[in-house]
Image 1 (cartoon, rainbow, N blue to C red):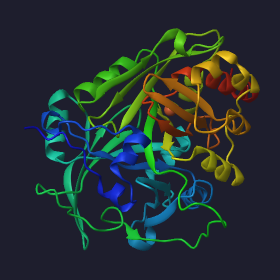
Image 2: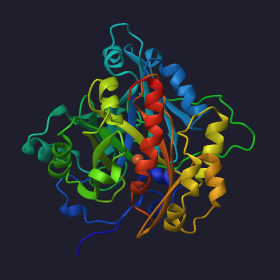
Image 3: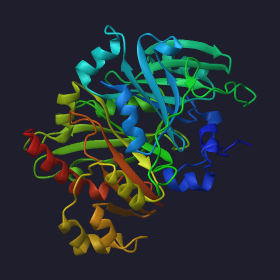
Length: 408
Ligand SMILES: [Fe+2]
């Protein structure tokens, strides 16, 4: 008999999440890991390189309600950069900024601005993954090695993906399934807390899990990267959006979605399609100087409360026109949802429904100076989609912003 049971990760267990909750939050499914050429357990951590990590770490605590848990920097023997580890539910962000004036992180910021450098994934058998990836011809950026400190050992390696983005693979368990490491994050990081105090009435966290990360790639490259995830990492294809689905008067894009076996890790991949004017994907590629991570979708079980708290801390969301909510066709299509449409309209929250259920979603404006990386909040109620029905309304909202920036 094959084992098709899905287990909680340590990060999920520490965050007091339950399997049923994760099925709803991120569409987690059981699958047979033994037949996977490149088994992936889930997200390990997302690394951002930014111009000022000290201040960015504060931003994710105040505006995103995340908690500081770890640190690496000059005080811990890391002369090159500072790195702050933040968590919310099962999500870990690592925010890095160069300290040494010659740190390569500064070169990264010069080229790309603030951005995601590493989508790090937890794997149960690192050697097996690297052997398979190398056999298919993937670029191994870091050979497998054990990192050890007084809290134990973690095995890591890294492979290249689109642009200057990488996947560090982290194995935190031995063959017996027991954790081999008990420190705050990875060897080299020390525990660190912050005296940042949440406002009265603010929930413990604003989101529980990471749902998906979208990658923008160049025209004609989407299928190559879909194939990379299929062949190198054993990912399966999910929904597919092409052509009219996501074309506005001005811009268009093509998008395909790949996911790991248990669907914790989902990667929509976008490429620009030819439109009348410059598409939002072209704008990203121009300002990021190439392919990279475009948005990260954070799963919440109460999007209304999350939006209210984030907005109270100054986060700006894309506006949705009233016409979206007043469109009788849309009202008919979305049917009954958990909150009155007026409450969603007040906040600009979008709704999409498919045969499995519905989802609520909203998008922030870019969170750094360049019009590149932004966030999505998503509350799933059965739907395993990505808001296909909202793409047109969303893109029109993005284009209004693009026009204001003079990039349309
Ligand atoms: Fe998304």
